[in-house]
Image 1 (cartoon, rainbow over the protein chains, first blue to last red):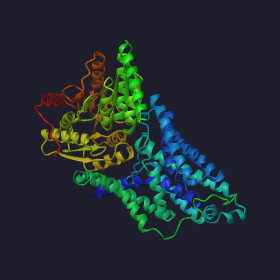
Image 2 (image 1 turned 90 degrees about the vertical axis):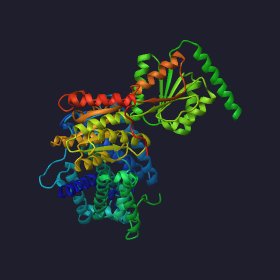
Image 3 (image 1 turned 60 degrees about the horizontal axis):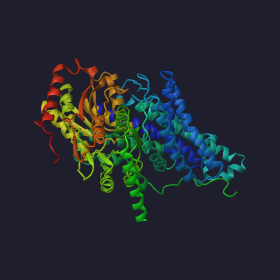
Image 4 (image 1 turned 30 degrees about the horizontal axis):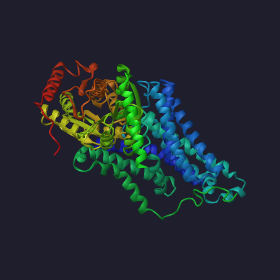
Length: 305
Length: 328
C-alpha cells in the first residue's frame, strides 16, 4: 500500500512538472503585463525543438542539444510574439492565437520532414531516464523535474525579494511609473516574454525527450491552456501556482489509478479524463474575486501613440 | 445552381467514360479523415496504398484531413479527374459515399472501417476481435502475475470488440486471470505513459494497446519498467508494431490489420471489372486481420507450445468454431 501511495505521488509530481515550468514562465510574463495565450504553441515548439535537437545530435550529447533546441525553439516563437505585442502593439489575444497556429503548423512540418528522413525516433538507449535517489519511489524523477522545482523557487524569490522582481511586478501594475523611473518598459516586457518562451520550451522538452522519448503532433494536448487557468487559480502568485499544479497532477494520477483499479469498466472513462479539468474549473469559480491580476494585464504600453 | 451542378456532373461523367475506355494505368484515390503521419489508422492506409500503387503500377492520389461535409465534393472531384477507384478510409464517409455512388455509378467507391452495407459501394469491415482473442491467449500464457491490461483510445465499438476478444481469449486459458482496462486517449504519449505506469503499479505484466500516436508512451513505460528489471510486456495493434524503435524486445506480438490485403483486392477487382458492392468482412478468415508474433521472441519467451496454441486457436476462430462474444 505504501508503495502504491508513493507511486501515485511520483506520478502526480511527474505530471505537475511541465505545468510548473510553463506556469512559472507565464507568471513572469503576466506579472510584466503581457497575457500570453500562445503558451500552448510555445510548449509544442519546445516538444519538437527538443526532439529534433536530440535526434539530429545523435547519442549521448544529442540530448543536451535537445534541451538547448527546446529552449531556443520556445524563445524563437516567443520572440515573434513579443515583437508583435510589445513593439507592434498587436492585440495580445489575437497574437497569442496566431502563435498557437504558427507553432502547430511549424511543428507538424518539421515532424513530417523528420519522418520522411526516417529520423522519427530517438537513437536506441539514448534518452533521459528517471534518476533514482534511493528512498521512496516518489523521489525518482527526471533531472528536469528537480530543475523545475529549483527554477520555481528561484523565480519566487526573484519576484518577491529582488529589484528585478520589483520591476517586473511594477510593469504589470504601473508601466507609466516604471518609465518615469527610467526603466525601459518595452525592453523589460520583451525579456519577460522571452523568459516565458524559454520555460515553456523546457516544459516541451520534458514531454518529448524525457517523459516519452518521442514526439506526437498533439503532444501538448491543451496543457498550455490549462496552465493559463492555473496561473489565475494561483492568484498570480508562485505559491498558489505550485498548489494548483501539484493538485492537478495529483487528481490526474489518482484518476489513472482508479481507471486501472477497475473503475473504467463501471463508470464512463470520459468522466475520469474530465475530472482534473472539472476540478480546475471548479477551483477557478470558487476562488474567483479574491485579488485580481496585474492591473495592466493584456494592455499595450504606451496606452496611446 | 442546381442545373449548373447537373451540367458539371454530366461533364464529369462523360470524362470518366472516355478515360475508362482507354488502356491507361489505373488511378486510385485515397481519402483520409486525418493526417497520413499519425502512426495509426491513417498512416497505415497511406503506406498500404502506396505499396499497392508501386506494385501494380497504378497512379495514386492521397487527400488528407477530409471532413465529412467535404467528402461528397472530393469524391465527385475524383470522378471528374477520371479516377476508377476511391478508397474512403473512415466510417464517417459512409453516407456521403453512398450518395455519390447513386449519381456516379461508374466510380468504384470503397469505404473502409464501417460495418454497414450500402447500395453501390463496397464496405470494408475490419474485425480485429479474433486476433485480439489470439493475443489474449498469448498474454495469459506469458503473464506470471495473473493480471493483464488493455489500453484503448476511447470506448468505441471496434475498441470494445477487441476488448471482448482479448478477455475471452485470456479467460479461455486461465479462467481466474484478471483483465484491467483504461482509456488514456488516442494521441497523447505522456497521458498514455502515465496510465501504463498506473496499470504496472497494480501488478499488470502484459498490456495490449489499441491507441494511435499514444502508443509511443505505452512502449516507453514498458521499456523503462523493463530496464529496472520488471518482467513486463506489450502487445501492439493495427500496425505491426513488433519492431517499434522503443521496446521491440518487450513487444510480444501485434494484432495487425493488413489493409494492403484488402486494398489489393479492390484494385484487382476494379481492374478486372468485377468490383462488386456489398459488405466485406475483413477478418482472420481472409487474412486481413491477423496476429503476428514477434519473431525475435520465439523460443524462450513465446515457447513452441504457446506458438502452436495461438496458431491453432487462430484456425478455430477463422473456422467459426470459436466466436467472440457479441456486445451486450
